Length: 171
Image (spheres, rainbow, N blue to C red):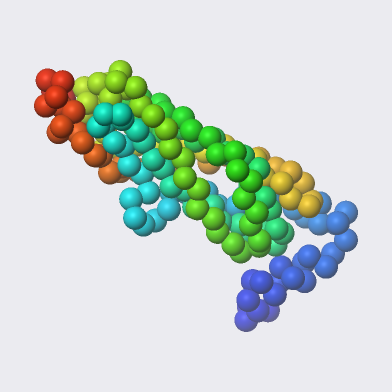
């Protein structure tokens, strides 16, 4: 049985009646089979401290369940330099079993947010938290990542902002 590709195993499992599948795959189990993290390449997180200031976060969502799912909506919080920035994704994204999708979250940062980040001198360390809602033929289910830290954003225009406003990082 170890020689079977996982797709073959899922194909067999999907043959079971829905009443049994709902017991085997409750919403929490389906959520565990959907992975959400920052994408691994090409600057997944950036903070632009220029004028206007903004942030961008690319996520990778992977459906490891045996069922097709649809990302209904998602929200993201980015902790960076003492500031919490938020963004949402409202587009529905269908994903077949085994398929991955990339999502872009972006938003504006106020001048106060930028000053806070510069003063904290910790723009290089960040964390995210994602809340998503998925639709599936068995159950609709939520996915919460919890606090994902260890993220190092690409910081753009820090020196220009410090020079323009005479701000000095503390610490």
